[in-house]
Image (cartoon, rainbow, N blue to C red; front, top):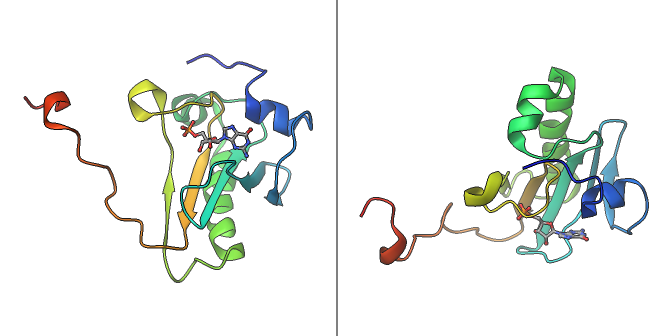
Amino acid sequence: MSYDPNNVFARILRGELPCKKVLEDTEILAFEDIQPQAPVHVLVIPKKSYATLNDFCEQASDGEIAALIRGAHRVAKARGVEQSGYRILVNTGPEGGQEVPHVHVHVFGGRRLGRMVPKPPESVSKTD
Ligand code: 5GP
C-alpha cells in the first residue's frame, strides 16, 4: 500500500478537514473516529507520513514508535477507560481491513468489547 498524500488523515493533519481532537503533541494527533464502534473510539496517528504499520516499523524512529503507543495509553487515560479496560488495534493491509493508508491506532473502550476477532463464516475459513 503506497502513501497517498491526499488520504483523509493527511488532510486532517494539514487542517483541510476538521476533526474532534482528543490530544496532540509534536509527534502524534489523536481524534474521535467519525463512525465510532464503541463509546470510546479514538484514532491515534503519527504526524509523519507512513502508509502502514509495516512502513512505520521499518522507517520510523524508536521515538516515533514510542510516541504512538504512548499516545494510545494517554487517550485511554484521558477518556477514563485506563482502569475499566480498553483495546488498541492496528489494521494493516487488505486482509487486515485497513481502509485509510496512513498508519493509525484505534483505541476502543467504554463497553465490553467481546471477541477479539469475529469468527469467519465457515465458507471462507482458510483452514478448509
Ligand atoms: P481502518 O479500517 O483503516 O483501520 O480505519 C479507518 C477509520 O477511519 C474508520 O474507523 C473510519 O470510521 C475512520 N474515518 C474514515 N474517514 C474519517 C474522517 O474523515 N474522519 C475521522 N475522524 N475518521 C474517519
